[in-house]
Amino acid sequence: MKKIIIVLCAFLAAGALSSGCSDKKTTAEVSLKLDSQKAEWFKEAKFGMFIHWGLYSILEGTYNGHTLPDTTFAQGNSWYAEWIKPRLEVPDEYYNGLVNEFNPVGYDPVSWVREACNAGMKYLVITAKHHDGFALWDSDVSDFDIAATPYKKDLIAPLVEACKKYGLKYGFYYSHWQDWEDPDGALPFWCPWRPDEDFEKYWQRKSLPQVKELIEKFDPDLLWFDTWDWDTHITPERRDELIRLVRTYSDKCLINGRICYTNPGDNIDFLEMHDNLYPKEMLDKPWQTPATMQNSWAYHGKDYNWKPATRMLRYLVHNTSMGGNYLLNVGPKADGTLPVPAVRRLREMGAWLGANGEAVYGTKPSSLKVDDKDVYLTEKTEGDENILYIFITEPKPSVTVPCALSNGCRSLETGQPVDMETKEGSTEIRIPENLFKDRSIVVLKAGLVTAK
Image 1 (cartoon, rainbow, N blue to C red):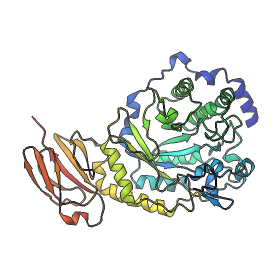
Image 2 (cartoon, rainbow, N blue to C red; image 1 turned 135 degrees about the vertical axis):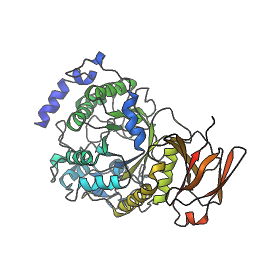
Image 3 (cartoon, rainbow, N blue to C red; image 1 turned 60 degrees about the vertical axis):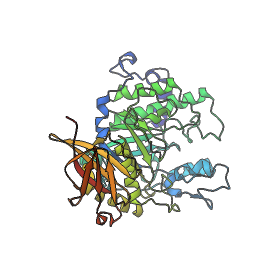
Image 4 (cartoon, helix red, strand yellow; image 1 turned 120 degrees about the vertical axis):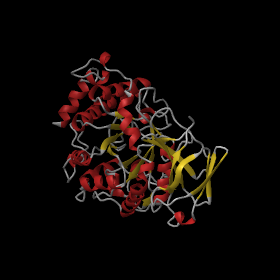
């Protein structure tokens, strides 16, 4: 049945899908332009969970006695376990044959969502299809999907149901450009370049139809597309064709800037930073940083480089103070369970946010500037009062903010008063040593005196 549908999609290539039109609207009626109000939830969310999971999770970063990174191979110098196929030159027949082994009997999407919620995360993004071309849902477009595995059951549908149950927004990573299983999909830059007319076949036969399928089956809140600063087949025309397709079939789905990293255009909903990149200046669109807990995104059995929760909280605080989001990745094991180090860190971060989340959620970046790399500021309005939150990420005896503060200053977590002195429009805050005893980020709350 799937092969029949694939053939039909090929016949439709020059028609509805290539133009992005639908049964309800013509191409001319579908605007590429974004509705900024749709992204309000995203700007308020601050913190999300990224999930990299697929056939590559079976290999855990190792193949045939070689473990990533491995300089034996010309392109094996990366920790990214989801890239194991091209980087360790895993043969197609072996890698694609992993579909016969993928059987995640430990998969419990409700437990995943509960961990995300308890960590303070407000949305979740999963790799519905990564570069290897394998789909985590039962796709009508391709046979290279979860239905071909011993597990057989759709992995996306129950995760969506769990997200809805717990009030978590959800979205899908979809590799629209690279596809190592499809005969016409793009390959890494060190492999032969596909003729553009061949890539167009993939684009019309698989990429656009699967994006449409994801929207119609699961109604996502966002789609996470992936390109970098490499040369790609994603021309402005293809970029806009894909944007138009999404806008046609969904009135709510957000689109990220990595749909075309070097030229996202004006019609994407939010900017996507490069991996683990944290901008130092404010950006003119909503944005987020996709980030790892260790070096790899997908589960890597020999990547022991786990970041401490306090460091990841600092990244979250930095992004919050700059008006951005933090999309933190977890790489489940092949059986569907979450790694213990990831769970511990999620819970530690959730505990800190449980005490200090008031300074993160519902806040905005402060217009005040502090010349201290260990101090971040956010603001919010409570009734008639403007509130300033001061994040202090390293122990220090005092912090000076360039404003006058009212109604005292106190620790947000414990309510402990903090001494301060205002002179010539600046306030020196003297910080008790005991606030730093557990080495966590200290958050102070104070009323902000504004000019009348």
